[in-house]
Length: 78
Image (cartoon, rainbow, N blue to C red; front, side, top):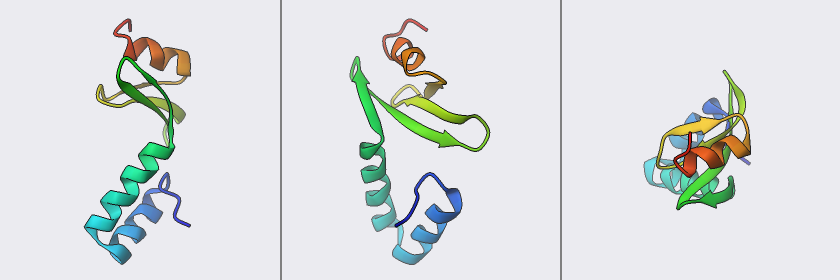
C-alpha cells in the first residue's frame, strides 16, 4: 500500500502506474484525509516534513497547526 504522505512513495507510484492512475489515487487520498468541511472548504489533515501535522484548507491554500485554526481560516476570520 502506498503512503501518499511520503514524496518518494508518490514518485514510485507515478513511475509505476502513470499519470492518470496517480491523479486518481491522489484524489482518493485527498478525499480520505478530509476531517471536516467548513464554509464549503474541505479541511484535510496533512503531514509535512517541515512542520509536522497540519490542517490544510483546500481552495484557500492555507493551513494551521490546529483544527480550530483551520476552521477560522475557512470562515474568513483569520
